Image (cartoon, rainbow, N blue to C red):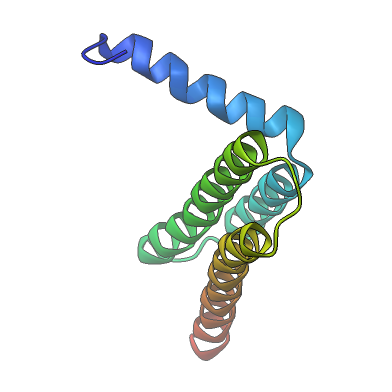
Length: 119
C-alpha cells in the first residue's frame, strides 16, 4: 500500500470520508452544522481572517470526528466485547471531539462579538 500515486491515495481518503458519511450519524451532523456555519458566514461576510479561523475550526471538528470514528471501528473490530478499559478509551476519543466542538463555539462567539463591536 506504500508509495502509491497521489491520485490513488487521494481516492483512499475520499473513500474513508464517504464511508464515514454513510455509517456515522455524528459525522453527518457535524457536516450539516458546518454547512450551516458556511451559510451564515456568506450572509455575514466577515473579514478574511474570520473565514480562515472559522473554516479551520469546522475542518478540525470534522477531521477529529473522522479519526474518532475510525478509532471506534478498529476497537470494535479487534475487541467486540464490552470492556471497561475499552469503554474509557472510546469515551476519551469522543471527549476530544466534544472539546474541539466547544472550542468551535467559542470561535463563533468571538466572531459574533467582533461583528457587534465593529458597528
